[in-house]
Image (spheres, rainbow, N blue to C red):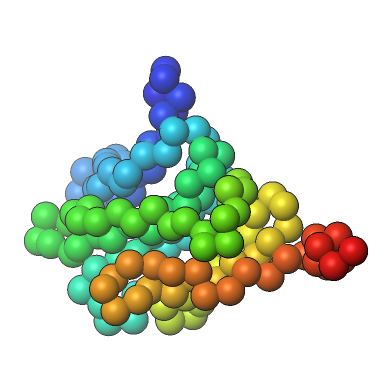
Length: 138
């Protein structure tokens, strides 16, 4: 983190010839600490997807293109819930093909996200915890 509290997300690599770690790519930062990072399985795509969740209540999916020089960040999507939730996301995890993203938040809600045909992300479902669901039905 910087002195201003910004949390940077970086991709590092260790070239055998240089014998030291170096930054390969720097992703879109978060305003506060990062809770979780998940790299989507690569199923033959020409790019990588990395999901990040921060204490700033932001959930981001970032796209990195492969190039001869390494990885180049090209797009960052800020995911927002259609259910109006503004909860802090604690965990992010991709499915085995890297096409759906599951998130869980501090309030106990699990959300599933899928990319649409325009490359944007949309929430396809939100599953409250048993206690949250019980409180909502009372």
